[in-house]
Length: 369
Image (cartoon, rainbow, N blue to C red; front, side):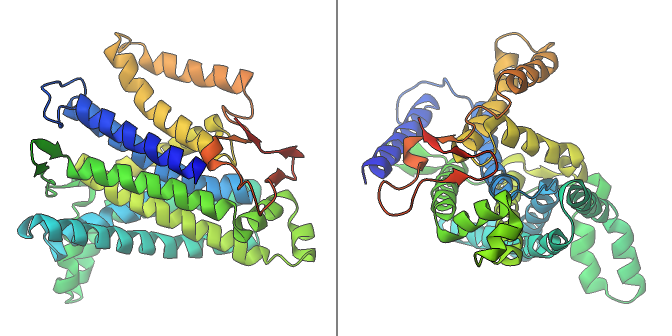
C-alpha cells in the first residue's frame, strides 16, 4: 500500500500538472501545446510497446524484432473497425469510449493470437535465427498491407466484393486516414482531453499489470527459462508454454499500442511500421536495461521526447546527430542500460512473500533505487 499509494499519488500529480500546463484546468496557461501533448501520447504508447517487448527479450531471453508487425495489425484492425464497421463518429461520447476500448481489446487479442503463432518457432529457433523469423514476420505484414489493392482486386474477380470492400478501404500504399477525433470533455470549468487521458490510464495499467506478471510464478518461470532452459524444465517449468505466452502477451500490448497510435496520428501508412520502427523499440529496451520495467519507462519516454526537446532548444539541424551520439555514449558508459537490474521502489519485488528477482544469467540480484 505504501509503494502503491505513493505511485498512485505521483501518477495523479503528473496527470494534473500536464493538464494544468495544457490550460485544461481553467487557468490561461499553454506551456504544453497540442503538439507537445501528442508527443507525450506517443511516449505513453512507446512505453506500452517497449514493456511488451521486454517480456520477450528481457524476461524470457528470446530475441524478437517483430513489434512493428504486431503494431500494424492492431493499428489497421482498430482503424478499419472504427471507420468501416462501427463508425465511432456517429455514437455519443460515452458510447464512443466504450466502443473504442472494445476495439482496442479486439485488436490486441488479434495481435496476441498472431504473437502466439509467431512464438511457436521459438520452440525450435533461438538467437539470431528467431530474430530473422520475427523480422520477416514484420515485413510480411507490411507487404500484405501495401498490396491490399491487388488483394481486393483478386477477391472481386472471385466474386467476393463484400470482402474486397473493407480490404480496399485501408488504402494500401496510399495510406489510410480520416479517423474520427475524440472531443474533449467539459467538466465544470475544466476540460478533459479524452484521448490523452485514455493513453495515460492505459499506460499506467500496463505498468501495474506487467509488474504483477513479473513477480508472479509465471514471471519467475520466464527468468528461469532465460537463465537456463534445460535446468528450468528439470525443475518442472513448461518452457514451451512460457515462451509462447510471452509472445502472445507482447503481441497483445503491441496491438493495443498500435490501436492507440492510429488515433493519435490519425493517418496510417505501411511505412509507419517498417523494420526501423522495430529497431526503435529495441533501442528503447536496451538503453533502459533489459528485464527492468523502470528502464523501459525511462528510455521509451525520454527517447521519444528527446528529439522534440532538441528541436525546441535550437538543435533542429543537429538532433539526428546528437541523438545517436547520446545513444553511443549511453552504451559505452552504461552497457547494461540506464537501470540495469534496478527498479523504482514501487516496481520492486514485494516486501513480503516472493523472494527478490535473481538474474541467473549474470548472477546479479535486482536492486531497488
